Length: 442
Image (cartoon, rainbow, N blue to C red; front, top):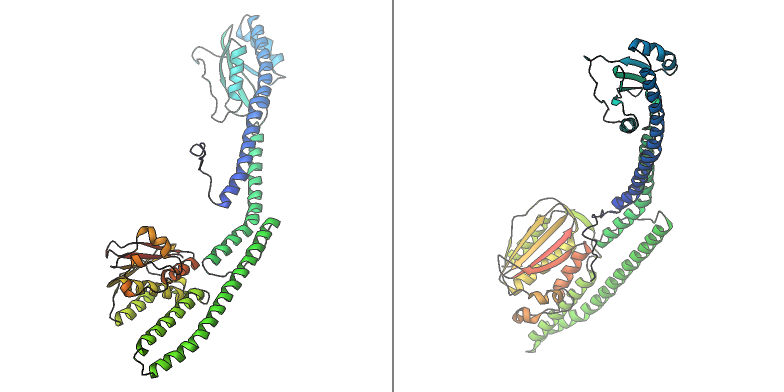
């Protein structure tokens, strides 16, 4: 298979549908806001601030030239008063004791750094810039009478409230994401319900489902409902057909059994064993065909269920033990089907070995029922075939015990799949034989 070379460099995407939909909604909005903000700050806001600052620089140069033509600070203040008053500008000469104030720009300045850079670039006498508030700007420059401070309105060098556009963009972005999220949740809810219905049906549970949502989702939902109905009809027809066949076969088998039991023929005993084997075959076929179709899910105590099975085998003189459970809570299962599956595993264990051990582990999202034996086990390369119906692994098991019809493990696997789980075969570390795990999602 050809691998994607960019897989290791691309961030891992969310696995859920909600996460991916949120990513699809959020990324374009965030990217658009960043793009607009960068263009606004670097072009519009910065260009406007530069133009306004250059105008102020020309005024500062004019003030410096006027001061150079006066003989004293008092004369300079009197001469500049008619010019500065209409502009709401204040001029003050600093003494040597006061020194030159340092720059003061707040951390959230958006245009202050541009103002300082342009004044320093175009006004050689510039010493420092202070922006104590959003309404005041103070420039200190070198004049004929030493450091001079001039105060004026901040609006003369930068636009008013430059952050408003960015705040508006952010708020509108959050609003768009919120509205889109609500709308997307309504669109994704039918898909989630369809997934829940399909998952429940895979576990053998039937939940009410009605196709809703967009046209495509409705089409998928309708197809699922039709498929579920067809599968139910097929299971029901298979069960009814084989149940009828089983019933029809039991009647002549019973007559044969009765006739052979009254017969004094020497071969009657062997023939009775053949009839008994035929009855067992019919029961196996019926169990396999029935599967879990006739069972209903119910909350049951798995430990109690297994304890009853183990005690039943112990009363028959079999060495079957039950380990202490890991976890203890009721689980929603088809009790009769699970009981039949575990019983098949125990039957195989005592059939091909002398000891069997049953254990159960109940975790938060799964249930594991393990049956181990000390028999010959099943080779790894043959375990897949062991789960197929009507397959008998005679080389892997003792033929002295009887070969059966090859439906025992197939029935267990079918029961596990009906609960949304699986049957796993391995080697028992404790007993050395076969280890069979029924793993079910709960």
